[in-house]
Length: 295
Image (cartoon, rainbow, N blue to C red; front, top):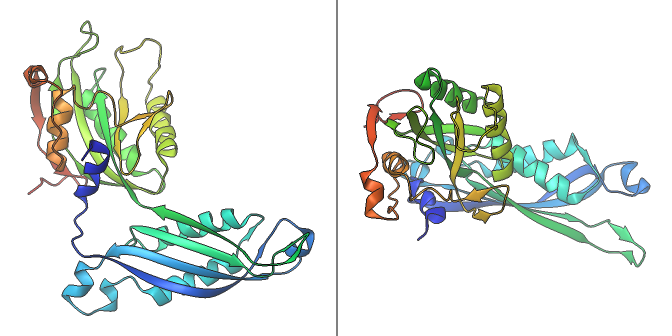
């Protein structure tokens, strides 16, 4: 199992299950043709929601379950209040709306069917399906200019305000020697586990926006910076593009990341024994995001 898959092991659920709301009738304006936009059309939605059933199976209360009747009702209400040209866009917006409205849902699969669609060959039925999920991501935060501890606190607080991101756990804080350019101050480093509805590229854009807001200037590579935010791992995602490489290529080369990911519950094997010889001093204790000490 690679580090891109290991992150999924941080989920606590041992009784994962799925509920369905099928053939839900919708009425909404959705289409590219003029006649399709004059009045609401009839569509049907099939929705499958995955969630951890352990809590509701331990008891027998609707409060501990994902209410599929409420899922269907929310779908109908959302469709009535929105207008889209593309069926795909409606499916994407509906999926994100439901994931926000039902925090128990870890992922959703939505299939929309338009029975009254028309094309040059006559009447027929068209449909599209889309899957959306809450993904776990691990970010690496570092600072070696100014008040390094305060900078990491500020960056963490800013990340907590990013829409559709929910920080879950913080690793211990470490003081580390610079590795790629040694003629600069020591770093403070910390890892952050969060849950997000954003795509990896959307999350990256938010991270870079926070860096800019906190005064980071990308003038010299590997130079000193007030804040550095790296995307280390993203659940179910692997990329080696110029814009984004995940898992981070330095993940197995830096002792502080190996120790901080261990704090979060992940075991990463260093690339060589020499990695463990890097200086890495503990500064602050392992905490959840609320600031309480971890058990």
